[in-house]
Length: 243
Image (tube, rainbow, N blue to C red; front, side, top):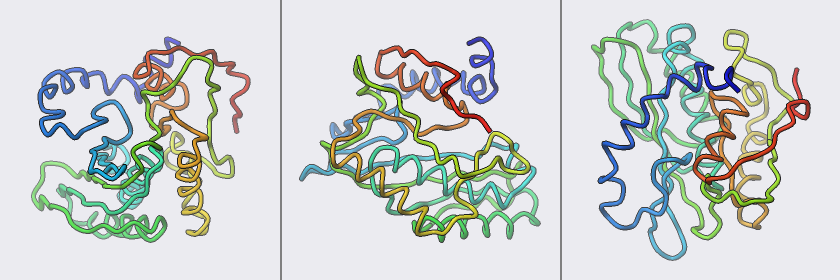
C-alpha cells in the first residue's frame, strides 16, 4: 500500500485539498449542481430528468514534452472517458493551449484532430496563449445524461462487487508505459460503441457507482471511489491480469 500511496500518479495531486477548501463556497451558488468536486464530471440539473455533465483535464507535462501529438490525442480521449464513465453522452469540447515552442503546433493540433475524429466528439473552440512560458494543453468537455441513471463515485454500497472494465486488447504506449492504449489502432466505430456501451449499462441500471481509471492506476482510482463513497474493499492482487 505504501508503494501505491507514494506512486507519482497519486502523490503529485496532494495539493488538491487546498483547491477543494478554497472553492468550497463556490460549488453550488446556483443551487442546481447535484454533483461537484470528487467525481469524473460535475452534474448540473437542467430539468426534465436531465443533467449537463462538465469535466476538464490538463495533460501531464511529461507527455507534452516528449510527444505533443500524443498529448493532443490524449486530451480528447481522457475527457470523452470522463463523460462516458458517468453514463453520459459526450457533446463537445473546448481547449486552452499555451505554446512556447512554435514547432509543436502542428503535432499537437493533429493529435487533437485525430482524437475528435476517432471519438466523434467535436472541438468547438478554445483559447490560445501564443507566448506562454511552457507548452501545455487543457481541454474541457460537456455531455448530457439522465439524472436518475448517473454513474457516480458517491454511490458504492456495502456488498457491491468491484468490477474492472478494461479492454485487454491493447498495449502500453511505446514512450509512456503507464498509458495502456486500446483505441488508437482500432476502428472508430468500435471505439464509439465501447463508449456508448457504458451509457447503455447505466440506462438499464446495471451500474450505479464507478470511476474512470486514470493516472493512479486500478488501485489508486479504486481508492478515490471508495473515499467519496465512504466504503472499503477487499482486492486480491492476483485477480488483476497483467501483460
